[in-house]
Length: 332
Image (cartoon, rainbow, N blue to C red; front, side, top):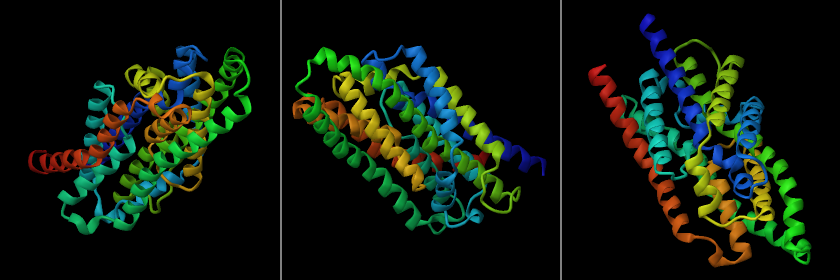
């Protein structure tokens, strides 16, 4: 039992580290646009994002249940070793992409790590719930596409109604509105992203017999929400620069459009219990907003690099998860 307790503790610790890294890795999703347009001071933006990430994470547990029940067929197909390997692979990938200032999906990283570790375990491919994985991956793929299209539509709509105003007048008004859109973005980010580690921790507790049904305990919600809020408070300046300025030169009106669009899509996914990549959604929204102004206003070269990182995330973290699991079984 002491060994089991130690492994459970390690799963929880790694899940919270993953949440913490997710917080500073994905801080850019909530505040990059408002910081880049100078609508809000960076330190104030981070404090606001940290607080609202916490409350967003406490909102519901639907996405956690999807993560915990849709990747594997049942809790019997996973153990602490699998979850440790999956979390380790996802954490390493997040640190690598953060180091190179490359926005990538923490959701993809975690899912890839779980898939790789399960395949390498005794359950093998039979332990995977391909229908559930398909649903998750479909939501991850469609969400940035929807973000791009709807971001373009919202921006065109705003151009139609405010295009005749003087730019200085419009930018002044939308700078204030950006604070509100950044706040909704931070809340929606917490409502979706923090639940992924909640799902992993709850799955570990269920598979080891500490709980009887897949219901996220209150203390798990508080721990995950706190870890993400603390990570957000640290900030992620490398990726803020990429999201906020390298895809498209944002103005307050376009920053507001991107944030509003992203928060609607992400919170909508939370209500549907679907995990989405907030990084993908925000980046897609910014591309759509930029394209509404002018197709060549978007730096498509940077966008291509980001897409390449997104495509590589699941296979790379699956390999990391598989190798880490093999190492744990052989040497630990």
